[in-house]
Image (cartoon, rainbow, N blue to C red; front, side, top):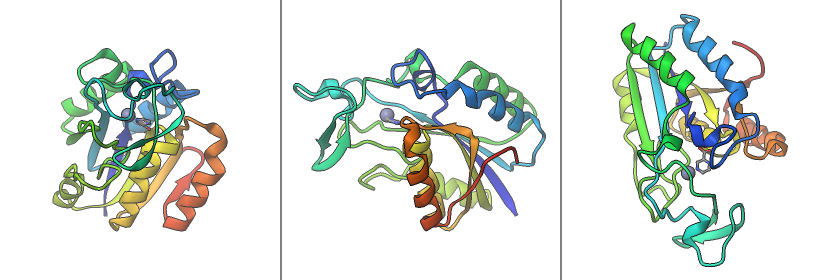
Length: 212
Ligand code: VGL
Ligand code: ZN
Protein backbone atom coordinates (compact mmCIF):
# COMPACT_ATOMS: atom_id res chain seq x y z
CA UNK A 1 0.00 0.00 0.00
CA UNK A 2 1.63 3.25 -1.08
CA UNK A 3 1.33 6.32 1.08
CA UNK A 4 1.88 10.05 0.55
CA UNK A 5 2.40 12.82 3.08
CA UNK A 6 0.80 16.15 2.22
CA UNK A 7 2.55 19.13 3.83
CA UNK A 8 -0.08 21.84 3.69
CA UNK A 9 0.93 25.50 3.43
CA UNK A 10 3.75 25.47 5.99
CA UNK A 11 4.68 28.98 4.91
CA UNK A 12 6.15 31.98 6.72
CA UNK A 13 2.94 34.01 6.52
CA UNK A 14 1.12 31.35 8.57
CA UNK A 15 3.78 31.31 11.28
CA UNK A 16 4.08 33.71 14.23
CA UNK A 17 5.07 37.13 12.88
CA UNK A 18 3.53 36.33 9.49
CA UNK A 19 0.73 38.18 7.76
CA UNK A 20 -1.88 35.54 8.65
CA UNK A 21 -0.24 33.97 11.67
CA UNK A 22 -1.88 30.80 12.90
CA UNK A 23 -1.76 30.54 16.72
CA UNK A 24 1.16 28.25 17.63
CA UNK A 25 1.75 27.57 13.95
CA UNK A 26 5.45 27.08 14.64
CA UNK A 27 4.67 24.37 17.21
CA UNK A 28 4.14 21.89 14.36
CA UNK A 29 7.66 22.26 12.99
CA UNK A 30 9.56 19.87 15.29
CA UNK A 31 6.89 17.20 14.76
CA UNK A 32 6.91 17.55 10.98
CA UNK A 33 10.69 17.59 10.79
CA UNK A 34 10.87 14.47 13.00
CA UNK A 35 8.25 12.74 10.87
CA UNK A 36 10.24 13.40 7.71
CA UNK A 37 13.55 12.36 9.26
CA UNK A 38 12.12 9.26 10.93
CA UNK A 39 12.68 7.26 7.79
CA UNK A 40 8.98 6.46 7.73
CA UNK A 41 8.17 5.13 4.35
CA UNK A 42 6.28 7.80 2.50
CA UNK A 43 6.38 7.00 -1.17
CA UNK A 44 5.69 10.60 -2.14
CA UNK A 45 5.86 13.98 -0.44
CA UNK A 46 3.36 16.58 -1.58
CA UNK A 47 4.18 20.16 -0.63
CA UNK A 48 1.47 22.77 -1.04
CA UNK A 49 1.87 26.53 -1.10
CA UNK A 50 -0.81 29.18 -0.95
CA UNK A 51 0.36 31.36 -3.83
CA UNK A 52 -1.73 34.46 -4.44
CA UNK A 53 -1.31 37.30 -6.92
CA UNK A 54 -1.39 40.79 -5.44
CA UNK A 55 -4.95 42.03 -5.00
CA UNK A 56 -6.37 38.52 -4.68
CA UNK A 57 -10.13 38.45 -4.18
CA UNK A 58 -9.81 36.73 -0.80
CA UNK A 59 -7.97 39.74 0.62
CA UNK A 60 -10.03 42.21 2.66
CA UNK A 61 -7.93 44.93 1.02
CA UNK A 62 -9.59 44.06 -2.30
CA UNK A 63 -13.07 44.82 -0.92
CA UNK A 64 -14.18 48.38 -0.33
CA UNK A 65 -14.52 49.08 3.40
CA UNK A 66 -13.93 45.48 4.49
CA UNK A 67 -11.71 44.34 7.34
CA UNK A 68 -9.77 41.11 7.65
CA UNK A 69 -11.65 38.19 9.27
CA UNK A 70 -15.02 39.57 8.15
CA UNK A 71 -17.29 37.44 6.06
CA UNK A 72 -17.63 38.81 2.53
CA UNK A 73 -18.40 37.52 -0.91
CA UNK A 74 -16.33 36.32 -3.81
CA UNK A 75 -17.84 35.21 -7.10
CA UNK A 76 -21.25 34.95 -5.47
CA UNK A 77 -20.04 32.69 -2.67
CA UNK A 78 -19.47 33.47 1.00
CA UNK A 79 -15.81 34.22 1.54
CA UNK A 80 -13.83 34.82 4.70
CA UNK A 81 -11.77 37.92 4.00
CA UNK A 82 -8.11 37.62 4.94
CA UNK A 83 -5.23 39.94 5.48
CA UNK A 84 -2.98 40.06 2.40
CA UNK A 85 -0.89 36.88 2.63
CA UNK A 86 1.25 34.44 0.66
CA UNK A 87 1.78 36.73 -2.29
CA UNK A 88 3.63 34.79 -4.96
CA UNK A 89 7.38 35.11 -4.78
CA UNK A 90 7.48 36.95 -1.45
CA UNK A 91 9.23 35.80 1.69
CA UNK A 92 5.84 35.26 3.32
CA UNK A 93 4.97 32.71 0.66
CA UNK A 94 8.19 30.75 1.19
CA UNK A 95 8.13 27.54 3.13
CA UNK A 96 9.31 27.70 6.73
CA UNK A 97 13.08 27.45 6.65
CA UNK A 98 13.00 24.25 8.75
CA UNK A 99 10.78 22.68 6.08
CA UNK A 100 12.96 23.91 3.22
CA UNK A 101 15.95 22.30 4.92
CA UNK A 102 14.35 18.95 5.59
CA UNK A 103 12.92 18.83 2.06
CA UNK A 104 16.36 19.47 0.62
CA UNK A 105 17.61 16.45 2.60
CA UNK A 106 14.71 14.32 1.42
CA UNK A 107 15.28 15.35 -2.17
CA UNK A 108 18.98 14.52 -1.90
CA UNK A 109 17.97 11.12 -0.53
CA UNK A 110 15.89 10.53 -3.67
CA UNK A 111 12.43 10.90 -2.17
CA UNK A 112 9.91 12.07 -4.81
CA UNK A 113 8.48 15.50 -4.03
CA UNK A 114 5.55 17.13 -5.82
CA UNK A 115 4.73 20.80 -5.26
CA UNK A 116 1.22 22.23 -5.61
CA UNK A 117 0.73 26.00 -5.80
CA UNK A 118 -2.83 27.17 -5.38
CA UNK A 119 -4.89 30.33 -5.06
CA UNK A 120 -3.52 31.85 -8.24
CA UNK A 121 -6.91 32.81 -9.69
CA UNK A 122 -7.93 36.14 -8.13
CA UNK A 123 -11.59 35.36 -8.67
CA UNK A 124 -11.75 32.31 -6.39
CA UNK A 125 -10.07 31.12 -3.19
CA UNK A 126 -8.43 27.74 -3.02
CA UNK A 127 -8.15 25.92 0.28
CA UNK A 128 -7.89 22.33 -0.86
CA UNK A 129 -4.77 20.97 -2.54
CA UNK A 130 -7.04 19.28 -5.09
CA UNK A 131 -9.58 21.87 -6.28
CA UNK A 132 -10.40 25.56 -5.79
CA UNK A 133 -13.33 26.41 -3.55
CA UNK A 134 -15.73 26.67 -6.50
CA UNK A 135 -14.30 23.48 -8.06
CA UNK A 136 -13.43 25.34 -11.24
CA UNK A 137 -9.79 24.31 -11.39
CA UNK A 138 -8.17 20.96 -10.67
CA UNK A 139 -4.58 21.26 -9.43
CA UNK A 140 -3.72 17.90 -10.96
CA UNK A 141 -2.84 16.40 -7.57
CA UNK A 142 -5.25 13.49 -7.89
CA UNK A 143 -3.59 12.46 -11.16
CA UNK A 144 -0.15 12.69 -9.56
CA UNK A 145 -1.22 10.51 -6.62
CA UNK A 146 -2.74 7.99 -9.01
CA UNK A 147 0.40 7.93 -11.13
CA UNK A 148 2.40 7.03 -8.01
CA UNK A 149 -0.20 4.38 -7.04
CA UNK A 150 -0.88 6.19 -3.78
CA UNK A 151 -3.81 4.79 -1.81
CA UNK A 152 -3.20 6.35 1.60
CA UNK A 153 -2.52 9.97 2.47
CA UNK A 154 -1.44 11.58 5.72
CA UNK A 155 -2.00 15.32 6.04
CA UNK A 156 -0.21 17.87 8.22
CA UNK A 157 0.14 21.65 8.10
CA UNK A 158 -1.68 24.95 8.37
CA UNK A 159 -4.35 25.71 8.90
CA UNK A 160 -6.33 22.81 10.33
CA UNK A 161 -9.69 24.57 9.93
CA UNK A 162 -9.06 25.71 6.32
CA UNK A 163 -6.52 24.23 3.96
CA UNK A 164 -5.78 21.06 5.94
CA UNK A 165 -9.49 20.41 6.40
CA UNK A 166 -10.51 20.87 2.79
CA UNK A 167 -7.51 18.92 1.54
CA UNK A 168 -8.36 15.99 3.82
CA UNK A 169 -12.08 16.08 2.95
CA UNK A 170 -11.32 16.10 -0.78
CA UNK A 171 -8.74 13.31 -0.42
CA UNK A 172 -11.28 11.12 1.36
CA UNK A 173 -14.02 11.94 -1.15
CA UNK A 174 -11.66 10.95 -3.97
CA UNK A 175 -11.22 7.56 -2.32
CA UNK A 176 -7.85 7.93 -0.62
CA UNK A 177 -7.53 6.41 2.81
CA UNK A 178 -6.94 9.68 4.66
CA UNK A 179 -5.47 10.51 8.07
CA UNK A 180 -4.80 13.90 9.64
CA UNK A 181 -1.88 13.96 12.08
CA UNK A 182 -3.08 16.55 14.59
CA UNK A 183 0.30 17.13 16.21
CA UNK A 184 1.39 18.47 12.85
CA UNK A 185 -1.55 20.90 12.52
CA UNK A 186 -2.82 24.10 14.13
CA UNK A 187 -6.05 26.05 13.45
CA UNK A 188 -6.69 29.72 12.68
CA UNK A 189 -9.50 29.40 15.23
CA UNK A 190 -8.45 26.87 17.88
CA UNK A 191 -12.02 26.69 19.19
CA UNK A 192 -13.06 25.10 15.87
CA UNK A 193 -11.36 21.79 16.71
CA UNK A 194 -14.44 19.83 17.78
CA UNK A 195 -16.40 20.94 14.74
CA UNK A 196 -13.56 20.05 12.41
CA UNK A 197 -13.22 16.59 13.96
CA UNK A 198 -16.96 16.04 13.58
CA UNK A 199 -16.65 16.87 9.88
CA UNK A 200 -13.75 14.44 9.61
CA UNK A 201 -15.78 11.72 11.31
CA UNK A 202 -18.71 12.27 8.92
CA UNK A 203 -16.42 12.15 5.90
CA UNK A 204 -14.45 9.08 6.97
CA UNK A 205 -11.25 11.04 7.57
CA UNK A 206 -9.22 9.50 10.40
CA UNK A 207 -7.11 11.55 12.77
CA UNK A 208 -4.27 10.76 15.07
CA UNK A 209 -3.66 12.76 18.22
CA UNK A 210 -0.12 11.91 19.15
CA UNK A 211 2.88 10.71 17.27
CA UNK A 212 2.38 7.98 14.70
C1 VGL B 1 -5.28 29.34 4.33
C2 VGL B 1 -6.65 31.09 4.81
C3 VGL B 1 -6.35 31.69 3.61
C4 VGL B 1 -4.69 28.03 4.77
C5 VGL B 1 -4.98 29.90 3.12
O1 VGL B 1 -3.60 27.67 4.28
O2 VGL B 1 -5.31 27.36 5.61
N1 VGL B 1 -6.13 29.92 5.16
N2 VGL B 1 -5.51 31.08 2.77
ZN1 ZN C 1 -4.82 32.17 1.06
